[in-house]
Image (tube, rainbow, N blue to C red; front, side, top):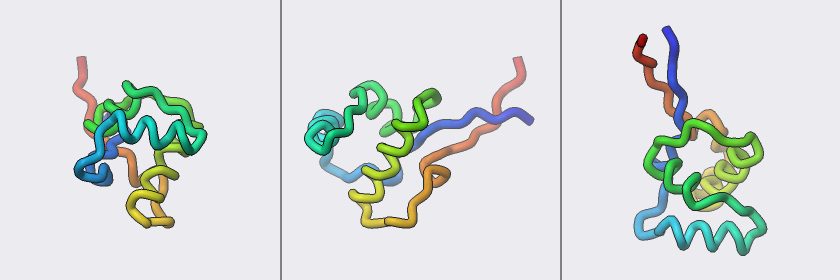
Length: 84
């Protein structure tokens, strides 16, 4: 069975933080991540990204949640892919 993999930050996204505010926060920290990437990850629909971006997202979630043990795998959601 094939699976589709998504980066899903929705369980970790802080309430009250907008895409714009997170984008600005990351920029100030020296981590540029495109707004579209952040939006897709926040909604759980990010399917393509560079490895470096995944590391930056993981590090940001670790900082926001205080969970230093969080792994990249924790940010991934797997769903069965429909046969076409």
